Image 1 (cartoon, rainbow, N blue to C red):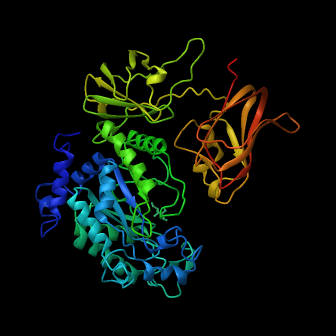
Image 2: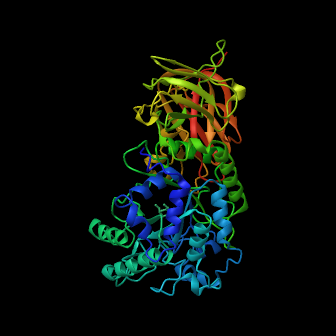
Image 3: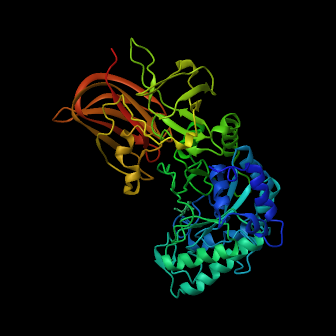
Length: 571
Ligand code: FHN
């Protein structure tokens, strides 16, 4: 990482903010910057963590923005919600402060989602926030608050527009066809609005396009080139039918990739827009997701959906504050780092900066009586470790041999979310060749064939195998409205098992379940229980079986399982 690019975040951001004050937004950047957006991309990569905000009149219904139009909410009703939209408690400064207190370095706001409603004072249509009882330019206030608090600001803009008569597809869900579309005319409308966003509210950190649908690569490239002509150093994502500057894995941690910039976008709850009593991720899930993302060399864009009164839900504010508290202690191991060299996995994740490697240990090998606590065994890293410092408490013992690195730490000193250890090595840590941490699973079900009675939208990313991969960022999920389901694993051969460790995502959904094994003729129950939770530890039998399943007979909502481990009995 070169010195110039390593410029402090603040001074780079100051240039970013100040540029907004000049007549020509790019005077500052164009004069002294490297070509295109190299420095802004560098700044973005070092920022690591941003706030996504999905908001609009649909918050009055508590249903999903765009997608509920013509589905849970009749189109006529949905399209007139703006007439009641009066979020009197909307306070842009307060929102930006929530982001800043969370340790977020940028904010991306939905200026127009698939429902076509515009949250800014656009001259292209009256279907916008200035024609609501609120009558204020939300994007203008948010952009100003970001500038004032030195937080970078970017705009989400949906390419598909299921409300606009010229965009070919419509609601529900983009599955219908408009009677007289005109895509060329729609593109001019889109270009007009994108220009307003950049010229009237910029310079922007990024133009975050979404769902190109009827736009092909040629049209997408034309729009992206147009955007760059208005602000040469702007970042553009990969969702305008064009590769843009970075990828955007969604609701999942992207794969380890130092070559192509990427940003995981993820909801702090389940829905993008506000939903009453939605299930919110635990602090552990939020932090471990952030660490797996930055450990893979990516950014995390974590989404909140403000309420119809203009507030971000207090419990979401609290969760974000907790994240900020964690980053206040360990942020040096996140901001301005690169992913690796030890690739993310069940064990945890790592980042590097200068001659430091930061380990975030999230899972330790199970104890092996009578030996006791076994060390975390990491592969060789090709650099000499000069010293080790445990930042999260206790004193880890780090032993380096030709074969690898062993990390020992008393159980009492291990951090439930992530144990943070700083290694100082004899050179630039970024030059260490990235290496995977071979996982020795204690579970005889690890990596085995699995099947299930239901899979969320039949998406492989939520298939049954996700519960047997020892990866805390993947899970088996079922469709909304599923109230009973089974998850089966084939161990490949008969195995003697007597313990199960089950981690339920969205704890509390499962209300009754049975653990069963197949004896060659039928399913036999070895354990029955009520709720599971995030860390259920179950002893049974022991039994010898090849096929084992979790039979969920009662669930309040689609059951979903992070991990289902099967272990031998210890005694
Ligand atoms: O359909 C949208 C969805 O509502 C949300 O805006 C996400 C955010 O990345 N993008 C689309 C789904 O991929």
